[in-house]
Amino acid sequence: MSDLANNIAIIEEPEETLSMNPRKFILWLFIVSIIMLFAAMTSAYLVRRAEGNWMEYTIPSVFSYSSIVLVISSLTMHWAYLAAKKDSFSSLKTAITITFALGVAFLYMQFQGWVELVNQNVFFVGNPAGSFMYIFTGLHAFHLISGLIVLIFSLVAAFRLRIHAKSLNQLEIAATYWHFLDVLWLYLFFFLVYFH
Image (tube, rainbow, N blue to C red):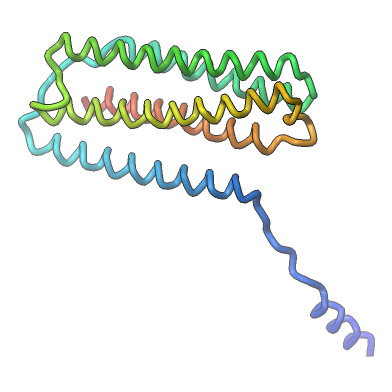
């Protein structure tokens, strides 16, 4: 009789459901779509490069420096997250502001890289090697601009004290996206350096 009662109790227990914040779920879908886009483009790059008629040029050194700037911005973004967990509002605002400023500096350095490419006579049209460089860096810059917009919303929320130890979703979304963009750039940079 006790076995029957145990079996009934097991059957009646509801299964635990996995749940995720809808905004985080949308973010991860967006990240997966970006990964697929850049995976397809890097594959196309390798196939086209193997066909020949490929311009040789020097990758602008400013791209190396901009990579360092972006890595530092990931550290400041993590600082913002740690500050929010400790309800250190002043540090939170400072860290997000520095992250934003480093993101803008990165974009400016990317522009300087394009200027250097033009000085080497590497243009968007004319040879696929140059086209791919502008497409890779331009698409990443576009996504980074969207990351800066997300940071602005997080900064406004921080000033309104809507981000704190018990309300981290918005900052977690911003941090996840920002770290992803940093990793994406490092992947693109090392890919271009290695397969240049």
